[in-house]
Length: 241
Image 1 (tube, helix red, strand yellow):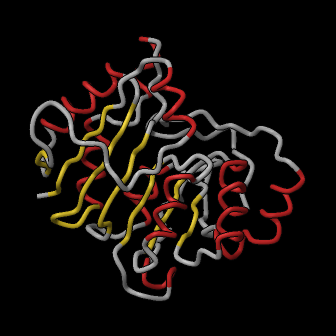
Image 2 (image 1 turned 90 degrees about the horizontal axis):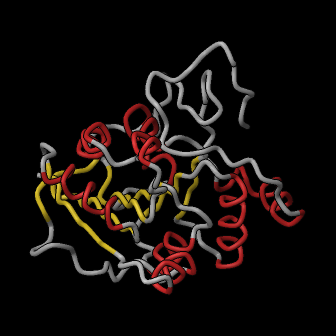
Image 3 (image 1 turned 60 degrees about the vertical axis):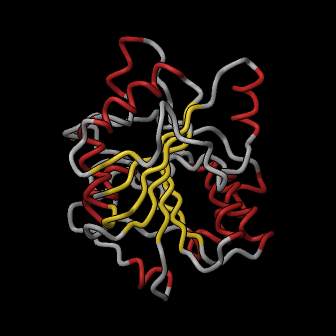
């Protein structure tokens, strides 16, 4: 359960999201109440609402009850991409990290309907989970699909993909693991590419300007909306050395 935030304490680093606490529908509330224990990791948040306390350690083998490739999606939204992937690949383990509870509740509803058992959810700030709670080099793939572009110049310092995130991502991925990214915001795509081209521990997993569209990413309404507005969808992939 999320604890109320202590207003006297603040994060050492800015977060890359806005906490959305919009009202959930009755069906979402019921899904959360009925199935939270089954899907949502019980994480001590410490002093912040979506933080990860320093002592938290998560063991994927213990969480899933098996040893299998681990795919982590940062900012899973309503879960479209990770639900599609977890259903298509029952031999893999999937962890969706999202701070928007209504989105997680929708993911639970669809997971229950689909009988998906290889998916877990975390209602936390993703970089903190990767850096504090998971052991180094345990993630096989890390997905960042359509993160908030923070379009206004004065807000761009809040963007997720920066040098510090690249450091955290490199530390969490296994050698040979893949960081996959996608955005419909051209300038952010260019920034991502610049950051990751310069990041220690990564090499490009594509040739030319952009990666081919990742065929494991289901086409969502959000992506279609961006394309309909004439925005080019840019994919990137980087391999951990």
